[in-house]
Length: 608
Image 1 (tube, rainbow, N blue to C red):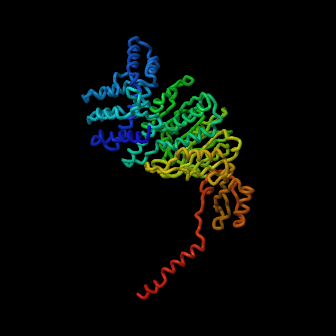
Image 2: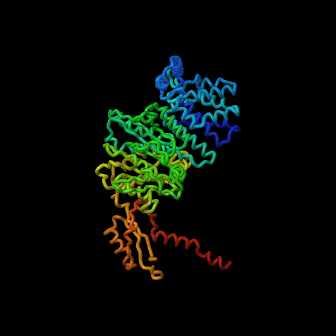
Image 3: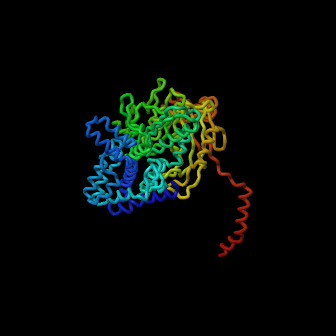
């Protein structure tokens, strides 16, 4: 699909709202109708060629009183898809009905005819309710007409004429994801809704995440199965693109590689879209299956933090863009806890015991992103050659938020002291649709290559981007193929450059010490100060006291019982370039030029 064809399709879908829903629904409701209808029509198109066969199998099954448990398998074999519809209707056949009451009945029968996975999608979209509302304002037929218009193709195969020539191009899953995301962004933008972009990641950014996860270890991939996980999977773009990367490498090297995709999503509409997208990819194994007698759903619905949909499951790749800067109070409520009872959290993902040491990774209540990182760390495989690679997007606060001994600092400490932090990449501002802030990509692994042992690489990619011709919300730049190659080269070269800095793990650690000295005004409550002493400070705490404190306050002492280790990272410290001051000669020349231009003006003003 060319960019022009994509633009035409986008414009057609966007205008459906203006053509059909205007004056019948509030603008804020448009996306609740357009988005599920878009997904429904995409599912419907793939069922059209096998509709007769599916109905024949259903008739045979019902006529012969065959076991119900065999029904789904037989019907999926007939549809050649991981889903089916046993109603007598298709969306095209529905559009010929002129009686509004009968149309609604038939449309609901059509929805009820889908298999269980699609029923889940339909219900998450609340589509039966929206159909009722459309019928009440006599718009159901009109919207079906629009989505079955022969001028558009929402299927994964091109539309051909009788001679086999392409009339309309295919809409592959990546383009479908982009289409969905752009429509959602524009609907939200039109209605001043600020969460546009909260549930998805721009495709250029997704491609970079997949590259950072897979390409550095491409030589270590072998034939077999790899499991990919995204605990904030949105519409599933990260999962599908990472899967494509791994499979492409396998194809290039003649390796038989399969990928199983796992995810979790809390928003009903994006969960439904993700599940539908994977179905359309015909990845039947990515849905319900039996695991040691347990029925498991690979795309789980609910909050990853408090409703773990993949309990105790480990993965080869964990790639996520989790929400940040939003409170997670509701998760505490789901645990039956109050905000003041954070310390009572017992989930071992966030409070693991390692080597008889209890770690507390629970962060402040205002930001959940470090909980997602801790969740991914808990998913790491230990007994495989590849181990697990985590690639996760954060804002800047994850680098330094929290005091020594706090959840955020403890998680940084655990990752770094266990030599799992491979690199952090600072990305350009304005890379996302709904925010202009800069972001940072964490790369964590429990299988560092030998040259990286005991070291952390920081990469400044804030200037590596190409401008967009037209802003998309806040997004004014992108990370295209050339920029991805540049960032990957900085990572894989692993060399000191202006944009790449390499440090020992200890560089980011410090002792938080409590220094006390007598209080002459109150000898019973001594004066206390807190200091941070870098772990790499010469001669440690004693050296720090001897050089930085005792020369000025000889009676100061360290309360060693209160010493705590913390970790934080600062890109500004290592990459900040001060503005070059102008030479004094240049400044002097400017002053003399001003004096020359003003000569005589003061006398003139005073005389006046």
